[in-house]
Structures are given as C-alpha cells and as structure tokens.
Amino acid sequence: MSWIFGSIKKSKKMKDHYKLHNIDIFIKDPLPEDINADFVLKYIAQRIPTYLLKGVDMIYIGQFKQLIDRNVNAIFEDGAIYITNEQSNDKDMIDDIIHEIAHSIEHLYGELIYGDKEINKEFLSKRKRLFIDLKSYEYSPPIEMQIELSFSQKIDDYFYKEVGYDTMWNFVNGLFPSPYAATSLREYFARGFEEFVMQNRQELRNMCPALYLKIEELYELED
View (cartoon, rainbow, N blue to C red):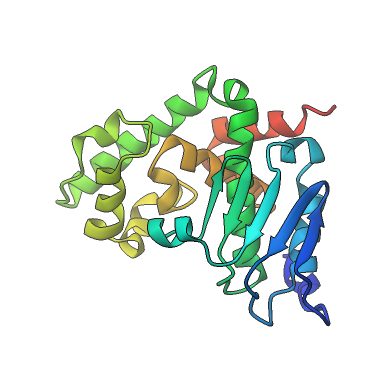
C-alpha cells in the first residue's frame, strides 16, 4: 500500500499542534518516535472529503481517563476524538482516527446510512450465519445475536473472552471485515468505512455490498 512507502519519511521534530483541514489536533502526551504525525494526517486528509469531517471539532492525542476506564484506544465524544498516544505504527494510528471519524459521520448522516435499513438487514443476515456457524462447532452463542443491532456487553464479551478474537477470525473471514465489526451495527459501519478509506474497496464490495454502496453514496454527496 502507498502509505507504507510514504511513512518512511519521518518528521524531524514532533509538534504538539496540527491541523486536519479545519480540525485542530493537540498532542498532550508524546507519540512514539517512529510515528510520523504529519504523514498520518496528510494520508487521512487526502482520502476523506472535508464535508465528511465537519462532525469533528477537535482531536486530542494522549492518555485520557475515558480511554483508560473503557480500555479502548479511541473514542468519539461530544464532537471530539480522543486517541491514545500509544500507537504501534502509522497505520495503527490512521485506523484509530478513521474509525472514530466514521462514528462522527453517523451523527451527521444517520438517516442516510440507516434510514432504508439495507445495512441493518445485511448485518443481521451475517450475524445469523455467524450464529449458525458457531453452533455447528459446538459453541453456545447468545441467542440475541440474531436480532440485536445495538452494542451488547454480553455479545462483546462472548466474542472477545469466550470465543477469542484469534478464533473469531476463522468464523468472520469473508463475512465481516473483522471480529469487532460483528459486535454491533455501528461497529459494522465504522469498520467498513475504515476498509473503504484504506483502499480495500473491492474486497469490501464483495463481502458487504450494501455497506459498500452506502459508503460510496456518502462519498458522492459533494457531487
């Protein structure tokens, strides 16, 4: 992928304030030395239209209580994205930011994304297939997997703790973009949006056609 080669050029000096189009970005705690914040933000700016970013006011990078309490790398909250400074590489940071931008887009275009319920139907169809596949291997998936669209701690714990994400990959391969995408409708959209932005579009189109078409529709709004 092109980002791999671009990320080789590292900034000589880490700043504490950046811009992503009109979004102010503040680095509260230092990033690892091998993270190129300039490259990360340029990559995102080139691939997400400005109008899809208008739901984000600020991005804060560092150690934050809400991230630690929830044991997550990033969250979108009250118009701001909070992201940990503990990043493995440029791609890891890009993924985190794009994922939370996707959640901000839901707030802006929720009716367009979910109003016709095409994604909802696609998601539940995949969940039902996953339920059957897990049962066939003598797992005991929660029955609400087949009907629940919203985040469920019970379902999340089941995937993460009982089955395990390493094993989950065997079940979601070709069905969901990742095990996490199966946890809720919102995460299904956000992970699909990541794949679209990261140029894995043909694979997404083949795997999740309704989701792909909805994201493509978002990208055509400006036209």
